[in-house]
Amino acid sequence: MQIDQIPTVFIFFIGAGLLFLLPQGRARVIASLLIPVVAGVQIWGLQLGDLQQVSLFGFDLELMRVDKLSRIFGLIFSLAAFLGTLYAWHVRDPVQQVSSLLYAGSAIGAVFAGDLITLFFFWEGTAIASVFLIWARRTEGAYHTGMRYLIVQIGSGVLLIAGVVLFYRETGGIAFTKMTLGSPATWLIFLSFGIKAAFPLLHNWLQDGYPAATVTGTVILSTFTTKLAIYALARGFAGTEILIYIGTVMAVFPVFMAEIENDLRRVLAYSLNNQLGFMVVGIGIGTEMALNGTVSHAVAHILYKSLLFMSVGAVLYRTGTSKASKLGGLYRTMPRTATFCLIGAASISAFPLFSGFVTKSLVLGEAAGNGYPYVWAALVFASAGVLSHSGIKIPYFTFFGHDSGLRPKEAPLHMQLAMGSAAALSIYIGVFPQQLYALLPYAVEYQPYTYGHVIDQLQLLMFALLAFAILMKTGIHPPEIRAINLDTDWIYRRFFPRLITKGSPVVARVWARGAGMWSRWSGGIVRQLYRSHGPEGRIASIWPTGAMVLWIAILLGVTLVVNFLS
Image: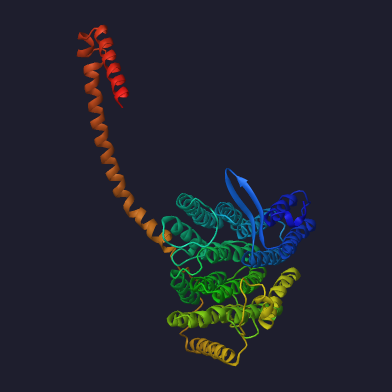
């Protein structure tokens, strides 16, 4: 069998299994690097069409449905897996090495799934594999966080398979194609996708789980789960109008939470929510250009978000903290990491000549041109907000700002290579956007570098920079202090514990009274029966054995008659 006939997911799964046959050390890391390279080369050469079909229990499963939408996600996932593995070159933990490959492979398997059953298997595969990147930190807090993360992710899969069962019952098919919200089946599938996409009120697993992972695990986590959900929404629910408003809320609310957050990895987790909102809006609009904007922004986002997580991770690796209140002035000894962070900040902020500028504008333009002026205005506000909390706050409080007195070494060479590659690609996409546009699902007739667009974006960015400077000078900007900010996790961190603490005594008293009443009532019945039917009872002393046999025969006859009539 030639390599182009092997489902891409098997390259990752077989490669992960072979890692155990290699000695611990450099050979295993090199093999981990080669696996996503081989997968990327295979995807690049694949022909469009349904390439791998199998039958299982009477269902026709499509393991490799290749079109322009799935291919571009497969390519960027392979590239992200390579960069994440390069960044983790120093890691000698087989748990992280294997789970990273299984995680990436499951995400790619889900992307190429042509049916809902195959999608479900790989959907759950991403949940199971990814949680080990949190548990690999091997702390009690990471264990509990991982359990919460796993419950949410498995819950998403349960909703998905329930929706698939109902969908099959309603339609008789399992093909993963465009659906409409009009039945319990499609609503369950939609909600399943929404959990992994971190919809509002369903999002806090992201801020809870990602910062709790290892330094390298967070980089891997930031790539696959949420972007897989974006792919699934684009495939299954493009043009669903409710997504426009969901995405708008997603883009706006993290701006406020990120501003008051002290943990920089949590800040980046909130900004991840913010950027997902733009993609969800594009899916909701549903035009070809809006979907192009969603897909291109997902590609750019994977690169610059990984870059930002890498830069903060490098600081955490060298200093042992990612708290803004404990950092500052690190540009003195980590100048290259600071430069890479600034490139990531410029990309996420959509500065001209950086990737975010040529991708985000596709979604904004479609929102403005399709009758959603308020949505467009909210997205413009969110764009200014992301400059504040990710474009300025991350590099300012980490590498500049006040001098923390820390003088750590520069990041290791392999981390610099991974960050440099992501930074170079972010700039390359920003300078040569047509190279990315050519890979998108639909033809792109758009020129981002027009005089009006560049001027408008620079005005927005300069205004946001000025606003940040004024807030800092006047002391209005929220200070970076040591604190725990609760989001929707307030429900299970505060509300439920208080409810249980206050309600448990009442429940205990009610239970004790109910148990006492039941004990007295049942005990009385048992004693009465014993007096009547026990060895010394009245009935036992006056009823002969023949009478008992007669009654058994009567009951048997009644049973036969009832069965015959029914």
